[in-house]
Amino acid sequence: MGRAWKYGDDINTDVLYPGRYLDSYEPSYLASHALEDLDPEFAKNVKEGDVIVGGKYFGCGSSREQAASALKYCGVKAVIAKSFARIYYRNAINMGIPPIETPDVDKINHGDEIELDMENGIIHNRTTGEDIRFNPLPSFIMEIINDGGLVPHLKKKLGTE
Amino acid sequence: MPTIAEKILNRASGQNAVAGDIVSAKVDRAMSHDNAALVWKNFKSLGVEKVWDNERIVIPIDHRVPANNIKVAEGQKAIREMVKLQRIKHYYGINTGICHQIMPEKGHVKPGWLIVGTDSHTTTYGAFGAFSTGIGATEMAGVWATGELWLRVPHTIKINVSGSLPKGSYPKDLILYIIGELTAEGANYRAVEFYGDTMQNMSISGRMTVSNMSMEMGAKAAIIPPDEKTFEWLRPRVEGDMQGVYADPDAVYEREIHFDVSDLEPQVAKPHTVDNVSPVSDVAGKHLDQVFIGSCTNGRTDDFEVVAKILEGKKIHPDVRLIVGPASYEVYLEAIEKGYIQTMIKAGAVVINPGCGPCLGAHEGIMASGERGLSTTNRNFKGRMGSPDSELFLASPATAAVSAITGEITDPRGWL
Image (cartoon, rainbow over all chains, first blue to last red; front, side, top):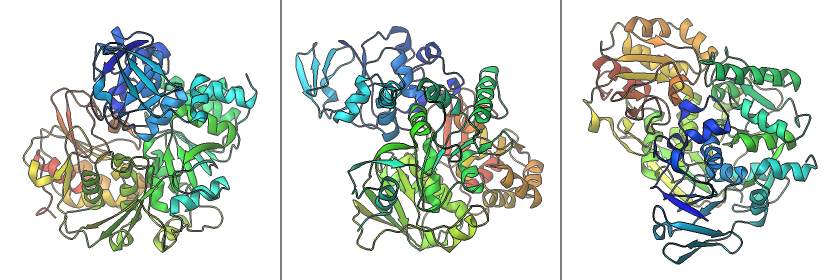
């Protein structure tokens, strides 16, 4: 269970992770600059298990996967949005963060306590008591997510663990 | 009845899929720029010893060249060591240019190929009839290990463009207009195919601008069917035969859209989204602090030809910083030979080395808070070219050159 950080439409990769910080791949550095140009308070206050909630076309822009990995290193467990930009959608999966698509993001407010049932496709909003349904991700994608992302998933597949 | 995207992905996967199906496809080329350092880091963690094919991986270093700080220098050093260790055949160092220019220039693009790159503007090679698309660095580590990746076969939007571009309007104005009409999400998850006499008459450079910027409406691939012009441009650069891939006459498209460019005015994308498009005349008069002409979108010889003609014998406005960045050294040398670089320098331009530099706010032209810029690049998100409190407009090289002279956003018609 975690809290919802709610943002608007078209949250792009430049505000998710500014280009000026693409000079290092250190997880703690990435975590410290996540969402910096959108919400300077986010990186300081985000907690393990929190979720991001956006509107339409979440993650549009660059292919930089730091826009997804920075969230992972902050402890974010899922991104919920009306729709995703295609590269971001793949990057989130490859980082082990499920991208959840639902038109009903309006039923989640900033700070609501959220619990996810990925298998059955249910977002439990513990603050409002409301359940939001979504199409569960295909099983081959859930395998990647459950393995913790593409790297651990491929290691398993290639037998290089 | 397949589209170009369906045909290419079926060939690459050995499957008989249609739009909506998921295939596992083998790639013809895998491109990574400076983020090859991150790909390599992820690749090493896979526990695989050798890349799947050291002749199909292409690495042009372009985002921060020469290295602008120690962290970047360390990353580029790691790439050079990896290139030696893995015997990567196609490595292009800091003296080559921007990846999306280098890929076709150095013969790594062929019609019908499936190309992936760790950069969103990898769609550029659609200008040569390839299916090329952007992926993340971790995904690329998987490609380096296995040579393949899963892809959903996209539905395709067919865009027909007809008419001659009026004086003062260029391929950049066309694609900005289309993005404004379709919106930033308009082609998300879709392939786009471009047809019509406007596309046939367009230069290779202009087609690259169109395919490059189609990413800004979400396109997964932005394919212009190859013609004699395409083959002629590629022939001295590629090895082996080329075979164009074309859609069947009864191919099934999700949507078909027509544009007539005969009355197209010069366009501009306003802060802070690429689909916030209007005619330049709507925003004319806004003062400018910086103008950037260059990048993989509009940093080619014919772009500089337009700019040099406008700047010939003139001086830029004293309050404007004009920065020019050629897309590659091949372009740079050609522009020197033709005298364009001298003309631009005499007018007051700072010419930077080929690379991505200011486009993503990396270096060589960062804007301060409260400043306003106009750029020929492809993205104007908040903070893209520096301070989150700066503003960036996107336009054609002609609009940029004229605006650098006047010091304010200016419609180029009447100056040509």
